[in-house]
Length: 178
Image (cartoon, rainbow, N blue to C red; front, top):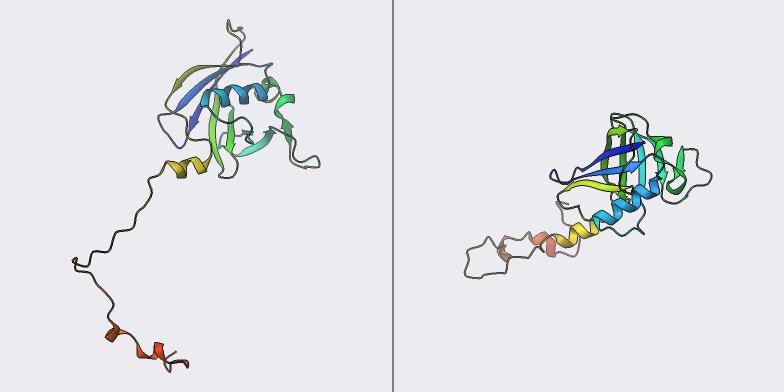
């Protein structure tokens, strides 16, 4: 069974990817093709979350097993096949690619077919727009530096004058009106 997922970002309305994957492929295969296509560092932590129609997280599929005694329902990407976790068209997922800043892509199964693909899966079928930076730190580095206005004595500014200061500030004891 072939699955077609639409991947979007809430950071850039022009961005999307359509990913074609076989149901027998794993979430790790999904992760790798996405990381490669977006030019991301695959060593960074990432997780898929199966969600309901309101994007509320229901099950996590992690890159590595971080909580052996976890009560929450989790699976590991290399052990979880797509067909075991995704069954219905319109099924939704969230792919968290920046854990520290909670940044993610939103994914929806838009089509599935009993046909097989002529190409090796997974692959990106269509793409538009540039991917957002992988880490929020990358966003900060892209912003222009703020500069302080230089002091211009010729410019009329509202300066504090010494004769306007509260003289109680200069007393060593606590001022009366404190």
